[in-house]
Length: 452
Image 1 (spheres, rainbow, N blue to C red):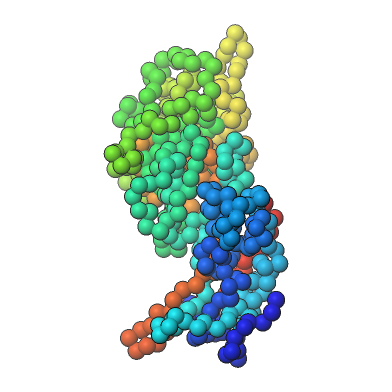
Image 2 (tube, helix red, strand yellow):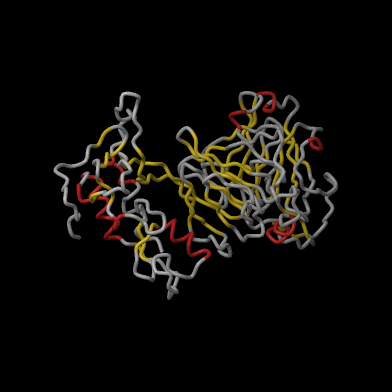
């Protein structure tokens, strides 16, 4: 690649101070390193079928609604994208060495003063879909930057304040389903009052303290915890079977099909199409009233979904000796039934020994798996009842979330962005903490070279 075309060559490498890599006054990033769509530094370069290189998130958003080249306007032969590994490596090397080859002369616009700019690292949350295979997101990813995202089946009518909208076509995803926010260095997910629910997977070997009203999902079955005798006070939003009558409402129920039907467009929405959200259900376990963890007379566990399961509405008592959940009949909460003297599992997604509840120190705890072995499909916490918004739940690095029935693995990356340099009253540069880009290349490393 040729050297920058500039009548004022950079005499020394740009300074790395004050929170980032300072671009020399009168210089700007070269066009070769900017995405033609966003005009921002490329962090995940891919080549489209028009031969031009774009930042992956930007071109993927474009291709959802266009079949033409954003650069030339011509029809694209295909919508396939190929990683530009050479450019990715070049940018990584130039950033880590603070090379002047990143820049060229900025002639400005007329008499407008030139703005000091720096390159800084910014957190981004990558959510990679793990299935189901029929989802349009299967094998694909979306990213949430510090502006956050809103997701669902229908684009909000109101302004999203710079947040990207993540579009779904899955029947179990509501029109306005979830939001991911960034604050104080962390990302948080919240349910916006969906029908299908937003779930967070219980981390392996992690004990989660059970609270009154907490909802969990094993396989396709959902359970709610309460104090004995208070089961009817906990609202799930699901029309349930008669409690404990054991009636088989639909012997041949299909869990996913039933859920998709009950979670489709039959939602409580206002005139603007926004799901009603106010409620006092608190899904963030660290921010709850201590009384909600107190079960002086034992724990009650009630199955409320999916609609049509033979155990819908059934109540299981849990004593301080604990309980196990699974498909085997030996479990105290067994997801099986006897048909013609044969034991039949109700849910093939549930492991033989799927999860267990223990009691210690005056509180109950739920943990995935048993005897050190995890379940196959995981144990999940539901953030809020149907049609009720949840509070924010922090997404840790490596966490898994379910949007309806669409599963995502979440991990953190860093990307490099341009930022105007602010000055204090005396005209000095801002004094943010050091943000050394030589270690960045977590955002511009080669981890995603194999993306398709």
